[in-house]
Length: 133
Image (tube, rainbow, N blue to C red; front, side, top):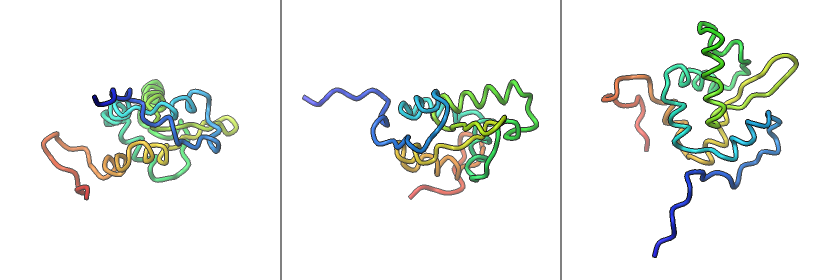
């Protein structure tokens, strides 16, 4: 008889959190990456835009990530991204810097981030700019 399916938290093992000095909630989320939560977070155009901006690798702090949205909306979207495990934040002085958890995401869901970043926002029946191998 086949073994029972594992819960949808496949990434608790193998994450190197020693170099992350994130806030406690970010560390907990890194241990509990869940594909459904990650995909749900990526499903909103504003959050997808934030992930694309952070994927460039530039240091970005919370106040400048989406300057044209009200602060309350930005806070909501950043919380959703952080709770899903997509981003982390690091305090430095009076600012919170954001970072995409690229290594953790790649380790848990190989190729997902690359595929998401390659796709442009289009109607559901259209295809990505680049096709996966």
